[in-house]
Length: 74
Image (cartoon, rainbow, N blue to C red; front, side):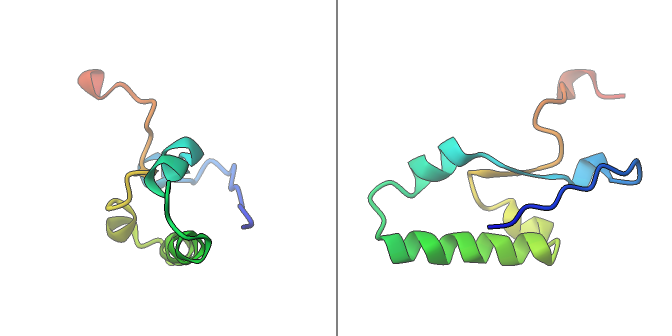
């Protein structure tokens, strides 16, 4: 898996895609290796296509800023 990072200021903070490996491993515990590979390929396709709605269905992917305090949003 190749990750590309865009550090330019034009990056929309609300559309960043975050991947949490610990949640991925928990979600795939007990799955066959081939099934895990297919799942990761599916997630990568959605990310490459910037299909944010599809990515939101995965518990190990977060779209936006997971560290932003939403209680004090401007």
